[in-house]
Image 1 (cartoon, rainbow, N blue to C red):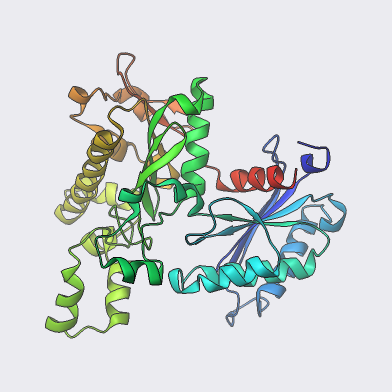
Image 2 (spheres, rainbow, N blue to C red):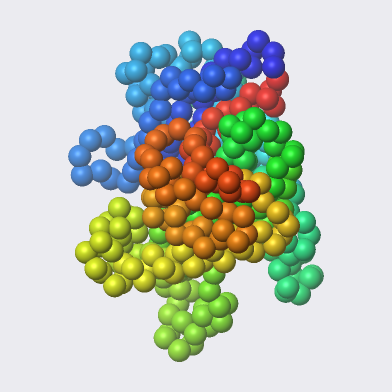
Length: 388
């Protein structure tokens, strides 16, 4: 990496009504500043209004200045932007120009809730930081390597090709980071390992990774497919949509809201915070207990599936908010799999730490880890590597 690329990278994750940011050094991981600007485009009950993403960039600059850093004097070498959906064409980070912005905009039908916010953030940041290269890093990019059989839906081929309907996968930046961090932690070459990564947060996904290359993942065309999540249903019978519509008279919008915002753990027990779910289970709440069991059943379903896909597994890693912090989930997800070479040590699993750590037994053929994710650092590193 050249000297220029050793400077800090500003990482921006822009949504429709929020803008998260970090200013960090890719080589060391040192974070100089981070924060979030919220309620973009809304009328606040108190405090200043943030009219649009351009105004959000200005608020970000002031917040960073309050930390003693003037962005224009910080020696920023790149601005890295998180973009949720890269479609079929973006499989690597890319330098952003007008054509790339237009291409991301063309993908809005595939990610109508996510890509518009990213585009607004990119446009605002390019205007404010016009002399710095901007790099788009796509959540879907890590899963561009999925084999054709793994990414193809069994629907009419011409329809799928015309409308770019396939399994894309999401949380790719996290899965990429964690699989490499796990290899580094173990002192192994990532190319020598078969891995399963469980990214368990309010949104949740699991991936099968062979030699550092993703070969399967639970999310599909949208982030709704796969695991039971905080408010998303995950896998359901596709006919459920028709049942909702024809039998219950629900509109498309109501169905979308139901499956994305009112289902998952929240739908099963009215709560999507695992700390509260644990407390309710301890108090004997049967709805919380059932929700937990459904969540674990789906996890085991996918772990078993990916064991079959990979043939053998060297490393299983838990990451993200639930995966890193919820001891009972890790224990239950892999309980009873000793015959498949997977054994979790109860004492190690109970340790609370923000560091990567082993939670499997010494004689477990498969190493089980907890690896904190760091998507911002991975975006910064990919951006720095591209401009270098």
